[in-house]
Image (cartoon, rainbow over all chains, first blue to last red; front, side, top):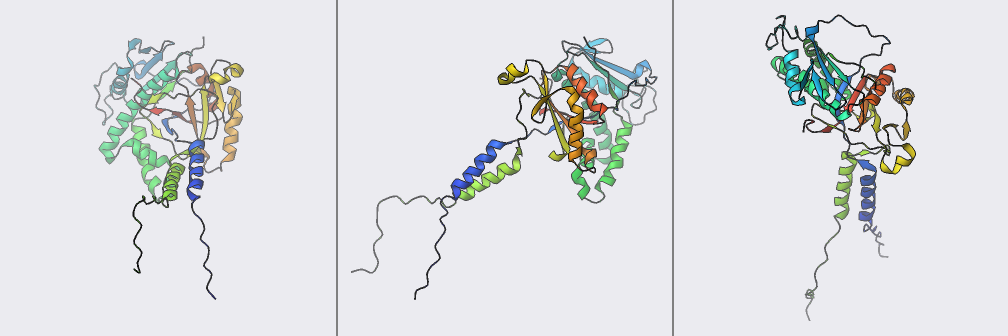
Amino acid sequence: MAKREAPEVNAGSMADIAFLLLIFFLVTTTIGVDQGINRLLPRYEENPPVPPINERNIMRVLVNRDNQLLVNERPMDIRELRQAAIDFLDNNGAQQCSYCQGKKDPNSSDGPDDAVISLMNDGQTTYETYIAVQNELVAAYYFLRDRESMRRYNRKYTEIEYIANDPASKAVDGLIDDLQPKVKLIQDLYPMRLSEAEPKKN
Amino acid sequence: MSKFKKKKSGGTPGISTASLPDIVFMLLFFFMTATTMKDSDLMIENRLPKADQTAKLHKKNYIMYIYVGKPKANYANKLGGSDRIQLNDKISSVSDIRSFVITERAERNSEDEKYLTASLKIDKEVRMGLIQDIKTELRKVEQLKVNYTTNKGNPLD
């Protein structure tokens, strides 16, 4: 008796099934935007204490309802804000900071430890302007931190901070323990003292 | 009489489609890995502002999303024309943020809680008054890690 051959499965419709799945995934998913400016909000307090800060250690940035900038009582274009913030933070007026490269202007901040940038918006300011201002101020801090980190560790601060805070880094032994103190040190050298006042309601 | 038949001449040979499923599967896997599931249908406009000092967000399960913007044209009748907040699938008010954050926290295990970040997806035309209220509310529930989610680009041009 002849051996009966196993019938072959027809795979002609495989492509159709795969196309169906493909189209399903195309429709139900998005290529996500998953980046942005990370900020840490201050803890909520009913009556926040006002620490005594010398006037020269504060850089006041005001944004009005027409999205115009006022920095230390002088109007400023947003394009100049980043350099103004870097000059202010890195000024080293007290000459106590060995890693600063600023102008040592006695009328500007004493050092990065004391310098505070105070940002205040109007209730009618648009979010776009707010983000642009945030972006420039955060850029000033990151510029100084990157510079210091490159000098000490030959790696960018933004890079080691991301790795140190990534939950996935827990998988590599000792990676977080190695980077955490470095991140902490750079943060202490240029602490981000960017305070946001409540906007005026009108 | 010849033993071998001559090949038929004429007529184009058919193109083999046997590798088509492989190609389609390749595309399928690409899209499955490169994209994320849409989790909520937005009822508000959401054109994000641009920034370049951005950091990538960590894995998606450590993130909660808060959307703010004007209602889209087809929802404008029902929701009005002013800026609204959307949490998951429904339009909410500022006071709902508290319970939203607590629910989101409860869905994660306690070890992951410190990585939990609030991603603020806010339309660029929204006014700061509302955003300040949201931030105050987040501070009250101690959700201090926030990310102003933006598109990549220079904000100055």
